Amino acid sequence: MKVLSVASEVYPLVKTGGLADVAGALPPALARQGVEMRTLMPGYPSVMGRLGGTGEVVFEYSHLLGVPARIISARVEGLDLYLIESPALFNRAGGPYVDGAGIDHVDNWHRFAALSRAGADIAAGILPDFHPDIVHAHDWQAGLTPAYMRYSGIQRPSIVTIHNIAFQGHFGAQVFGGLELPTYAFALDGVEYYGGVGFLKAGLANASAITTVSPTYAEEIRSAAYGMGLEGLISTRAPVLSGIVNGIDTGVWNPETDPILAETFGPRKLKSRVVNRRAIEARFGLHQDEDPLFVVISRLTWQKGIDLLAEVTDDIVASGAKLAVLGAGDAALEGAFLGAVQRHGGRVGVVIGYDEPLAHTMQGGADGILIPSRFEPCGLTQLYGLRYGAVPVVARTGGLADTIIDANSAALNAGVATGFQFLPVDADGLRGAVRRAVSVFRNPAVWTGIQRAGMRSDVSWDRSAALYAELYASLAPNAPG
Ligand code: ADP
Image 1 (cartoon, rainbow, N blue to C red):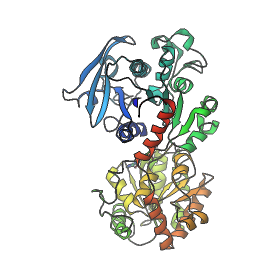
Image 2 (image 1 turned 90 degrees about the horizontal axis):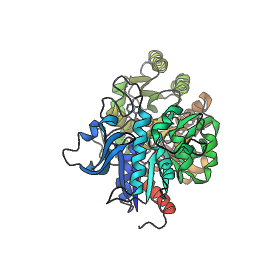
Image 3 (image 1 turned 180 degrees about the vertical axis):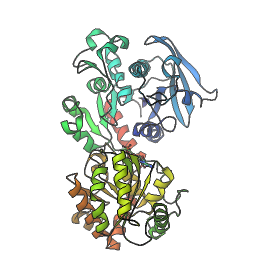
Image 4 (image 1 turned 30 degrees about the vertical axis):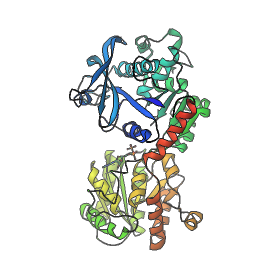
């Protein structure tokens, strides 16, 4: 089975979000399932700079949507890549989507239409040594790929994966001419979207299958509350929609070997976690004691429900727990926590900023991690929490609902509980869940059981890759392997 992945960012080469993690992690995990995945991505300068003369030109366009371009094949960081080398489109400073000042490039429609066009061309067989059985396009940037395939008559199955439906690639109708699609593609079942052109919409309308990054998010985006305008189309396409939860890099996130931790530990050595707890207390200016310690590692935004957390901070302290918050985001929310530190010296601590090593230490020493998100397509911090024995206390939404087993009495009796869920996602819900967690924490045998059950959960990419491989096989039943 050969699959072409089309993505605008791929870890560890370029990353702005979870899409890059998935695009970077799937190829090696799929290889273990017998699937050969190659990845088409833009030849950003940072990526081209890593080729070190190893790239090979495998296709030369006379023009790709009006500009010179060629496709370079290269193996970088263990990934088999096809890079679109096109100085006019991709050789510029800044991030993959924005300029040095953080403003979206005005020709993003052109840049990512070119990515999608090249994806469809590879599906059509322009490369002599790689004829994919399936094309797997990620997010709006690759969303036109299934549309180009359809309007070019390319009979290959395609998949679109939605990592966050908030980003849709919606442009004015004036860009349509530059897409080099037939006029009739500007239609309800084509690329037209609210009078303009919708890249993600075009993908959703034309792909053979749609996935998103958790089964619950797949359900949620069928409703107006989560679908952000696309709920009607998503509902129509529900028969081909499914959710596959992301994995994490269990090599990097391994509490038994993690060199960042003050002390490593495993499920039978949970007492060693105290060394990490002391490190957290020291860093956040918290009292050193055995009271339950909750952490938050998050963007400080409304999506993440951080305003709810600010609202219940006093109650968390009143319940006898301590709170350490690592994050950056809305100034008002940052200020709310700095205020809480003033009120609750030694019980609440805050570090404003992004600090990856500190995030490891926090997962390795906290008793619980609080994740009160209003929506969460998949979420990663709860998966790290499971693996590191920081018991997740989560809103019952998206991937949080799918990855955490609530400590209700049936789950506790069966020994399968891995955390605490709450619904509705409001201050009372969060307050109640923290109270419940604190009360269970007072029973060390039960708490340790929850930690160990979490550490046994399979959060690897292998599990996700097996599900993607199954999906590919169902779409291309005649492909080998
Ligand atoms: P999202 O991508 O919506 O922000 P996720 O839970 O999917 O949420 O991923 C967030 C990632 O960013 C996790 O790896 C988390 O550990 C990390 N992270 C978030 N905020 C911080 C921070 N302030 N410092 C360090 N890591 C952070």
